[in-house]
Image (cartoon, rainbow, N blue to C red; front, side, top):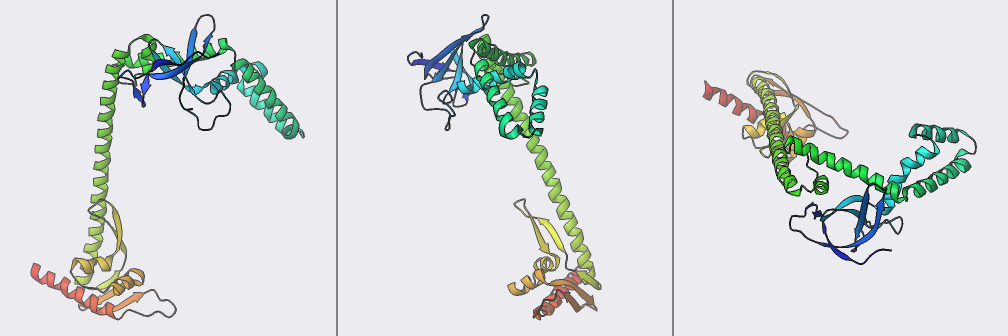
Length: 323
């Protein structure tokens, strides 16, 4: 039977070490022991931790009493029984997990396996899991294994001076919370430095990518400008440019040159250039022809020739100024 509600100090508060010494209303669930190790298990008396409990004992996370603190086990009593009992049931019924897998594979190959034999086997396994997992001695041994891992994690951090994660549960068991807080500060500082270094590397790589993208685009544009200044066919390919906000955009090379040289192009013609124009042919400083995607009922934009000639005048005017 559970005892009355008591004010106990949880090891963590709002996900962090309970530095302020906050207390919670807790109920003693039970004490488990294997003869050598004994643990007092508590739970909060407040609202359930599980929104959809599978049983009456699946509502609240268990806490184990460690000195002056309650350290969370990260599981309900229902889950403790299952996690503790499953490997014991496997060992009792099959010997090991490999034998279990083979046993059920054989059942699935039989005619009555899925409809009759497998459900019976699972029921037998579940009964063994609950029986073995409910044994206080088995629970104490299982909890001991968990806490030993937490102690080992803390001791590793203690040995390396906070280079690895310092486990507060392990520190609480050993009564070394103050040292753990110091190690946690070093560990957080290390993680912040690592994050800053990753961010710097990522930004450097992104900058390099932006510069390379714009370099390739400028190379395409210079090749296009050379054709406009001399003669030949200019394909209306797409170019990719990095915008000021760091994002990338694709542009029609002809439309981009129009904007670069200040040639005013009606929106409808800009849309036609984007969607239909394939290439332009330049000869003797003028547009001698265009290639475009033909659609049923479609026709060539008449405004395009005026726009291209205006572009050619601007490009040649640039050449004269440069000369």
